[in-house]
Image (cartoon, rainbow over all chains, first blue to last red; front, top):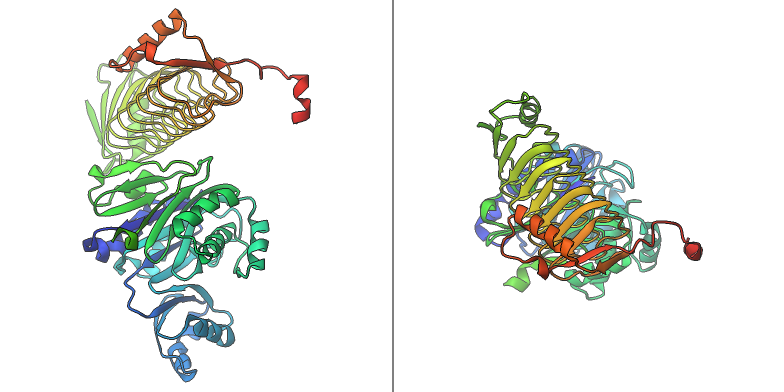
Length: 299
Length: 228
């Protein structure tokens, strides 16, 4: 099954409430998947790069991290949140990744970019949301996922969202049938993978397509031809938010749009607490049809 | 009339009250407020009760209805009125996928649009959709009628048995073994009755086209052996 949610704000006045709104949406979807949960929040970009890290031994890995980075000549702030840490720096992302690989091989990079922060863990949405203080987070858009695992193990790394490129992330309800072959092709193109999960392949596919110059909408159009299986995807980029369903469209999806936001839920239940939902345009996204919104293009 | 507020009352209390109406009872009107997308609202009704749902519902609303009259003043999630036996279900808004699936009787009216697989495997139910329907609708429909005032999506009536389909707008594509058929006087009469029952008073039966089974998939055809 799996439950997915997304919220793309048009009204800046709602930005301080993004974490709270998205948390409630995700918790409502708990009974669609109790295995693990995750949320990606796109906060304000302040010119620094954010890298979200995860560790099974956060005390050991993160306590000295800022000092160790400084000793290596990398000026960075480190904010520890439970098993995750967000490193903010003006330094190059490649340097951070190289440092982490060399000094803390068990630490995983959940995602990186100018604005995205990604938090995911095994457990129920309410616990995951509380553990990372998601309710207090502000931002422009975000996506969330609660997982009922089918294609790979129930682990932190197998949780969604998957991020395979700067400020990009994806959540998936469904199962892909050609992910092994596609993973091999993407590895040949230079992509790297952390898991055997099918959804990570979809994320990497979109990253690779966008690296070739496509925008999110064009990459999602390509996914309809190149991905085989069941999927409803919700995808975030630095300024964009996209939704696509496979042509069979058996994985549920409901969308709502007002002057203030565009919202996505696996079910209408996820949307009922949003402000002004009574007067929102509510619809079921069409099969094999790409929907996407972009803050930069709208501006 | 009994009112159930699903913001404060568990769904099971509503459904159990609906199931325990005594035969011949005169207090048979129910109102449901704050459904907020709840699943399985008013399922398993087997008495001639009336249920007014004030808001949108989630999965499987009015499933297995046998004799009840259920109106949803909002939209419905997947599987509304699934396997209806008899009675009437009216959705004022839109319905998600497989509305009226496997229904054996009764009338399902959708005032808005229905998504994919509307009336899949229908076995006697009458479905009238004031808007449009999605792909694979009436797949393997065995009997009953599907009336669509708007358009139909891809693969309408794929592998159809004897369900009769009437579409006023365009059909994106017909499924395997589904063909357009002549609209005879008896069909116009039948359609007029269905439209009237469904409150579709501003359209004429003559505006519709009829689709049905070409009956070529009923039995195995040796000429198709290469296809398997």
